[in-house]
Image (cartoon, rainbow, N blue to C red):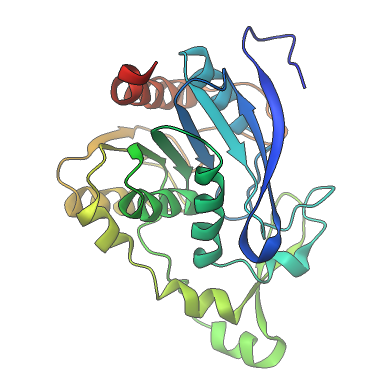
Length: 267
């Protein structure tokens, strides 16, 4: 698939991820360039709002950016048409998906994750020696889901319903996700991460407060930190995308520079 608005290659592909489910991806940039895997967050997907634009920005700097859907994110043909899959989504499945995608992409890797995807890439970056650098946008600091009345819902229905303000759907999170979250420690991963880490967060983030950035920076003192004044959880981006905001442009510029610096020797 060619994109006439850019000077670089854009094409779709997929790999087999967790439980044999497809991990659908879109690659921006030359296939021979060092790759950055771009992970969406909770209630996110590869085509959401800012992700295509961010990948264009990274590819425009001479790298390859790959946005993708986690295998159980609930998006099949349309926007969250498979909530039965969303119910089964877990941090462990995310790690399996990242491993499958990384195996299909040669060379050193950069990782970028938003929100829950930020936690995913810190976990994967600590475990995968090919990862040369990691950056996060509004990252969570824990995969443990803390909801006061979770157990009541889990006993009664088998899932906890999280509202999606945009689609008006109730997004079911199953017991497996609650239990699996406790098996992964972002703190341990951040402490052991050897790849250079950049943490970008907005100080007006209501979904994942900036305190999460402070925690991760405390666990990994070598991390570079950018806190953007007045920025919320998506740095002003919406879906459908209406163009970048100043906060998103600032975040993108810093992230792109981070990847260029640490993957530059491979360009």
